[in-house]
Image 1 (tube, chains in turn blue, green):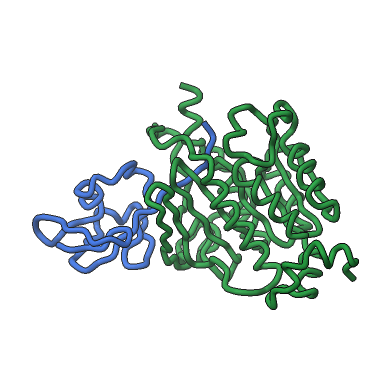
Image 2 (cartoon, rainbow over the protein chains, first blue to last red):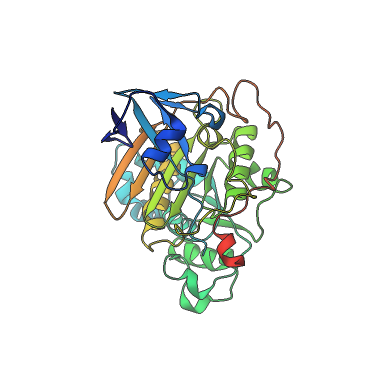
Length: 71
Length: 271
């Protein structure tokens, strides 16, 4: 499956049906518990991660909290 | 009317057709509130003062610490121990005595934020923690105040401008702060010193453009920056109908503190 992840092409091995939770896992997304996922321009609810499937050609953005420079 | 000295001071502005004498007068008549007088707040405060924004508010309860000086360029070595708002005001008025600087030596909270931002035309989030970021977003959205969000971490930065009611807000992207009971890793803590300069300067640019009414604001797009790869990216963001503060069925209708929002990096300090 070929996706666009954060603006870059990404290839995922295996079958076509992959939910967001598995995608986060497959791409080894850092701090997956805090990431906001945008699929084809729509922000997904965290509760929808299991039920939402990605397919070839989809564009996915992983958006992170950025707090600040406090040590 | 601008004095001859002001015409000279702002001449490089005035010669821009997007600014002119009229725009410079607009800047002088405008009021911008900066929340946070640290890494982001420093360049924002200095550039807005230099630009001749007539009234600038700046809020921060903290005093200058030695470890701030690597990036918080409004503060000098002699200022260690001095309240950041006083240190910032000193540099701003030394640079431009035309500017009125209002200091608020306090942390913003649900109790005081509406009063603090009330008289200003535009608000800039230069804070370093999630409780403040969510509070500023909610207060600005609920009182209809346009503002610029900025966030930095390590080598990454992000910024977006919010026009309440018209464009996506911070909660459209991040509905809730990181949960307090989950223990995040702090491997992403720390910040390269120039980073708040880049993001803060972008935020100051948005304030100036907003006041002038020129150009296109950074609305409905999250601008992200990575200093290591020297890459800017724009992520299109839509207003989220499920947004808890500006969506169709908002659950946040009054300004409240996010008690569950713990600064991810405070955990390291405590641990």
